[in-house]
Amino acid sequence: MTTIKNYLSLVKFSHTIFAMPFAIIGFVLGLKSNSNIQEISNKEYGLKFMLVIICMITARSAAMAFNRYLDRSFDSKNPRTAIREIPKGIISANSALRFVIINCVVFIIATYFINPICLYLSPVALFVILFYSYTKRFTALCHLVLGVGLSLAPIGAFLAVTGVFAIIPILFSLAVIFWVSGFDIIFALQDVDFDQSQKLHSIPAVLGVTKALKVSELLHVLSATCVIAAGYLGNFSWLYWVGIAVFVGMLIYQHLIVKPNDLSKVNIAFMTANGIASVVFAVFVITDLFLLHS
Image 1: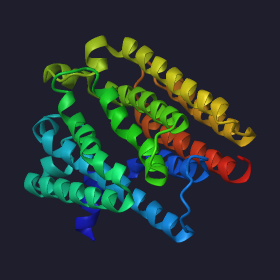
Image 2: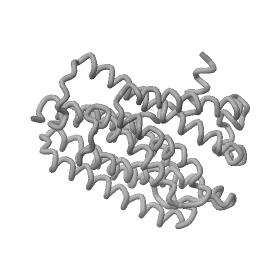
Image 3: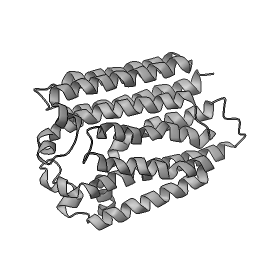
């Protein structure tokens, strides 16, 4: 049990709360989509749902563990991250790398049992989520790359059900890109001095705290625009708009509590506000789709 707990801590399993709700939204959208003309049983849908969950867990676990493996030398120098499993010697670097490989293999196997398009795109998905860990070494746009990685959740889950692309899940994926990029910039405010000292790239390290917060605000405005556009194009009912109100409210809240001269509430903005935003939004969207959406 201790070993399992250590690996769950390594990959910050609790952070699954960010992308998983959007994956479930994508899956339910697929179920309700008019483009899904396949006649398959509830049992088969249930199996696909389990496979999507497996893909979500293994892809994210691979990405997080690879990030910890690749950043181990930086983590050991940063007081905030020196307590992580690899720097502390709780999990060896080689063990973490083996964990990455195992999760990648399981991910590809799961996509094989979903449908051909998911299998064909699985190497692309793995490349994106693993490539993110390199980006702080050469570009301040690393936050957007992280956003792209997590944005695969809604469109990937939709593809698992339908095997085709559609505008509504794409809008949700765009919303995730801007949302995640925005809150990752806020999270990176904690490491401005360290990143600059190690020549690591991030928007806060390049632009400074005040301008970085402005960029984060802009990205969150774009995220809100995408979910609003999805609401109009998807002809959602009132429950969806209640969900949007909560989602946008949480975006505004995190920008109210994090100030250039006061970063003490960064973790509240990062985990609490965004966790509430994703879960509550997903509950309202999924309820709308099942109860009110034609």
